[in-house]
Each structure stands twice: as C-alpha cells, then as structure tokens.
Image 1 (cartoon, rainbow, N blue to C red):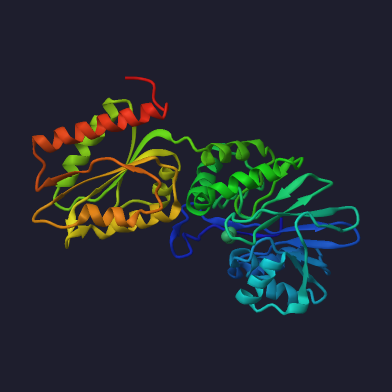
Image 2 (image 1 turned 90 degrees about the horizontal axis):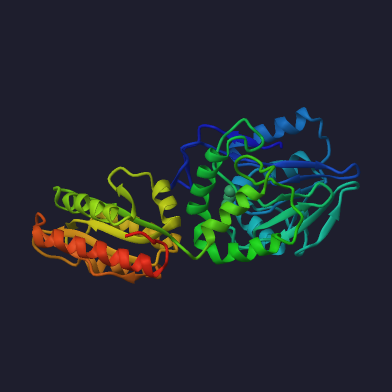
Length: 386
Ligand code: FEO
C-alpha cells in the first residue's frame, strides 16, 4: 500500500461529512518483470505517494492502472507520468476519455483494455473486471490472480482514516462502510446486485478498496452489502423534521411514542442540526419515511426541502412515506414535498397537517397514521409482534 491517509479531511465533494477522515489507497504490484501502480491519490496527497515510492526504491513503473476517473484516485496521475516517463496508464476506453477530459492526459500515454483482459507482470497477473456504476459508469476493478486479491476501487470502500492496513475492528468499519454505501453507492443498488453476482465468480481471499482498510475476511463486507442492497426494508420509520415554534415538535414527540408502542423502530432527525451522513445511513434500511415540516413562505422549511432532495437523489428502498406538519395561514407544503421526491417508489400515506399548535384530533390522526404504518409493515412481513 503506497497511498495516503487523510486524517483531517472533514468534507468530501464539499457535501459529505467525513467524521473519521478517509484514505486514498494506491497499491504497488511488482511482478519481477513489470511493476504496476493501482490508482494514485487525491492531488493534495501527491507528495505522500511519491515519498512512499521513493522509500521503496521504485525507479520504474510500467503501468498505472486507473480504475476510476474521479480525482481522489486519478488526480496524481499527471505527476506520476512525469515522475515515471515510461509509464502507461492502463484503463478502459470510457475511463480513458474521462481522464483526458478531467486531467488532460496525453492520448499516447494510454493502453486500453477490455473486460476480463489480463496483463502479465511476470510472476503476477492482473485481470481487469468491469464493475460499472459503483459509482461512475467507467469503474473497473483488478483481480490479482496469483494472490486472489480483488481491488474494487470505491466499491466496498469506507471513509475511515486508520493506521491499520487491515480491518481490525469490524464494528467501526461496518459503520464507516455503511455510511459510504449510503452516500455514494445506494443510488446504484441494482447495478451493485449485478456486480456482486459478477465478482462472485472470482475466488477472492482479500478485498483491497481505494478508501479505508483492507478486508482480509471479505465475507464480512460482502454479507453487509447483500443486506444493504436487498429489496426487503427493515421495520423502521425514518423521521426527519424541523420545528420552528414547537408545533411540529409536539407532533413528532407524540408520533414517536405512538410508533414505538406499536413495536416500530424510529430514527428521528432534527434537520436543524443533523449529520446528513447519519440521515443517509438511516435511509438504507427504513421501510417508511415520514417527513415533518412547518410551513415557511407557503412551502416546506428549506432544510426539509434539502433533505427531500437528498433522499430523492439517493433512491432508498423505502416502500411508504407520509408527511406531518403544521401551518398558520395556508400554503402548499404537502404538494411541494411530494414534488421533491419523484424517485421514491413509495405509497404515500395520508398526511397529518395541524393548523397551528396540534389539538386532540391531530394527535388522534397521528395515532391512525401509526396504525396504518403498522399494518403496512405487517403486510411486508417485517414485523410480527402486536
Ligand atoms: Fe473515491 Fe468515486 O472516488
């Protein structure tokens, strides 16, 4: 491993929180006759990669394999090509085009390969495996045939800075990998199903992703992915909300108790302060999403609109949704929220909207909504009690 650990990075894409930092894993494979560098690092860490190669006495690199054109892995390729003037970038035609667009790499520095193409380094063989849409269309992995190591780039990755090369605390890595899946991979769930089937044909003893520690027991992360991508959601209600003058807060408080009493797990998020990574993780499993909003300038609160936009983009597997909230003098809050979530393939359950501070009939309506969610979860056979 010759990549870099980014302990202090706290934001990715100026969007995704990184509470535990991240790493940009690059791997060097010496086959005796040829040497290959698998991916590089984020351009902010180019000197770390160079120092690691210099310390190892690597005077020649023949191939720089680029699995994915995003700059956190490809950004140091131009400097590597200057440092190793005989090196060629090995990638697929789609990734080549993207690297030319994103990094202005010269056409004659490329060798293009196709799916399942092999390159011999002497005693080591690289087999390239297309794994599109995890999470860009050009993404591929490399299978190191003799050592049975699969390098899947972002696929199976985790934003986790750690000095341990291998997973040494499965609970910590599970959390980081689930957060990563939720934020990066979840919109491509159907592609992940196909890619998992494809790599199932490989005899894999180790998975070495491009972020986070290496899995020397690959079953751990493969089983986690199988759970996350399954069509069956869990008996959970995700309840992101905002309250300005405590009306929505009172409804949320009542509703959470009503759901809990019916044996339904609730994940409540105050959108005034929530970590969107945690919200994304909750979207992985929830069968039902209930959005809580006051009415602001005739529509939902902007933080609620942002959460709806995010959930719509992440395309979770939730089956049901509803809206609870309040208004003082009117508006189109419910209609506007519905318009923000067209990608959610959910059945919309009757919203509960209070005029001002909720009254007894509003609380009764929340109880009815909790009953309906219970019935729906029972239909899905994800709840058996009550
Ligand atoms: Fe880690 Fe899609 O780059």
